[in-house]
Image 1 (cartoon, rainbow, N blue to C red):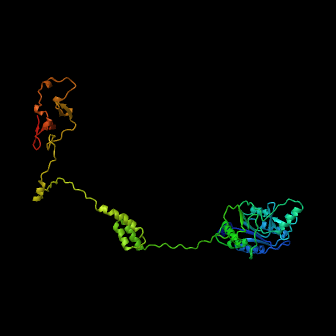
Image 2: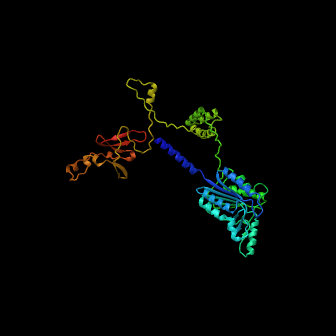
Length: 456
């Protein structure tokens, strides 16, 4: 049961979607040729028949009327108004006599005499009524009027109005019209101009419409430009179709056909070649790219490989000719044999190689080998123009330290153990240092001489 309900729901949704996508088009086509009180027109009936057949092929619901008197004309328009309910597009085509009176346009029924201005409304249909009715019922309204022919009935109306001194203005052709919401009105001739019937089955205007209505992907405003060009060429510029538009959307009688052009398949590289290229690319070396070009000169990556080659092969020589580091000479390390190994004569020679001492400028203090370095925290003071290193207070002998109490008499009377030759002479390279708790000094004998140590 649930599966059946689900299936019905899917079908309903599809129907709703199809109804939403499908565009309902309705048309009224009228052709009046056989007029009872004036010369018959050769083309309007033929034009109406051919236009109606064409619109049916384009998906329009078509209502057709031929040679309509006033009652049939009114009834046909009323039927069209009923069919027009709910339509997306409404189209009206009229071929026959028309005229303008006091700036308003009227379509003439086949039994009209137009001898009295008071009877105009009973012998004609006002165009503005049809246009406003269509605008109120459809989203898009299209009106095509091939009714600008020379009208002898209009001359009857002018003579009658002059005889009774009635101010009636009967113009030539049709008057300009101002459409409203999404409405397009097309005259076969410009306002105030007249149209010709032509010499063929159809009028120049209808014949051009029939040629262009079925062109797929041709928007209606573009189509009308082509129609205008055709009519002007056929009439030697004597007839110029005119359109009055308030369209805010595009309309196509036949939409563009879907493109059937097939996209050519993209050629895939050979798997072996692809693996070779990926390996060469991953190696990121000049030789690997050149190997690919040698093996596949017309391969799938022949445009990309030279770019890699140029980038990698330019950088390779720079790395190959980079200067090698200059070795810094140093003293050879002594070879110390193990307890059970007897050094060879060559090893003994290397081990006994003299160690070259760094150059020391004359007069500089030389630290004797094997002795501890002087304490860097020694106080330095000037004594008799010489800098003398003085040991810190905590490392001085007891006899040189001061106390908070009075100096002991025996300490004052005790002779000093400091010898005169203990005073360091910097010019001679003497320096202070402590060794075994004693205060000593060194004396350098000059460059290349031995250094002596003096302790009290």
